[in-house]
Image 1 (tube, helix red, strand yellow):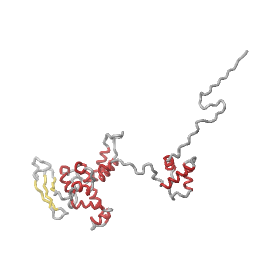
Image 2 (cartoon, one colour; image 1 turned 60 degrees about the horizontal axis):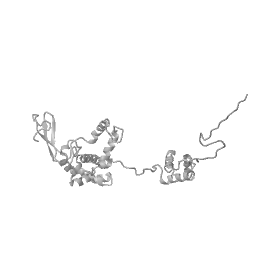
Image 3 (cartoon, one colour; image 1 turned 120 degrees about the horizontal axis):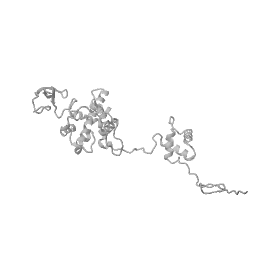
Image 4 (cartoon, one colour; image 1 turned 135 degrees about the horizontal axis):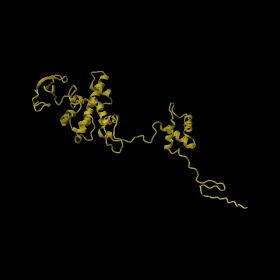
Amino acid sequence: MPFCPFHPEGGCGFARHTPYEQVDPPGCLIARWYCRLATRTISLLPDLLCSRLPGVLADVEAVVAVEAAPSREAASETVRPDIELPGALRWIRRRAQLVHAGLAAAIGLLPTLLVGYKPTVTSVRLALGAEVALVRLRLELLPHLAALPPPLGFGPRPWRRSYKRLEEKGTLDYAIPGSTRVRVAPETIRDWLKSYRKGSFEALKPRARGDQGQSRALSREVADLLLSIKDENPDYPVQLVIRDALGSGKIPEGLQLAPSTVHWLLSRAGLMAKAEAPTSKDHLRFEFEKAGDLWRSDVTRMTR
């Protein structure tokens, strides 16, 4: 290392320090330097090694088995057969979260290279055409490694700083298009981040409900029964429709028919509209439909 990263101008007593041995892979020595003025050591980590995790980046990419396996339990039998299932699941989950967080950040920093790809090892490997995606990304993201999460970069783990940063973002004012609101709750931002890490920008787009306009509390059979009862008895209020439905014996045991739900169902079918009253009717003598149609007067003659 030609100069101190904290004091490029020199004069800080920057010198070579004792290397340390990496636990995994065994026998790998990491070169170190020491800055006396900053009282900090600087290590030179080879591109193939993980940051803040033991092992090499190629081994960490074994989390790809989690993406392809039917479940993490099945993946643990392949990735970590040497430990018990609970420990293997924690081991896989920790690495999968770190890798996916790093890949999501890489997609945002390299939009021209990774546009349209998901933050998964398989997808990024395909985009880069590389056998080991994390090693290639470390070269592409060299100026950003200090902020990226491990094992790709040298920044802090995302969950150690995320909530504090989300709270800070929740206190800021934003110009939100199409809305009068100016702030976003930290829980909402967390949900957006979770969706983005799973499916990139496509996961943030609003989606129409597949059951829009349908009752989610009532099955199709129960809904048809309620509609048929109301259709046969147009004058029935909601409570009588529920009574006849329960008395038919066709309602599953334990199912509660809420009046508001039944009213919503009947209203959607147009069965709750009241019949219009006739516009004309028979009138008695000197009775008219509208005020002012008839004027009457009474004259009394007074004599002496």
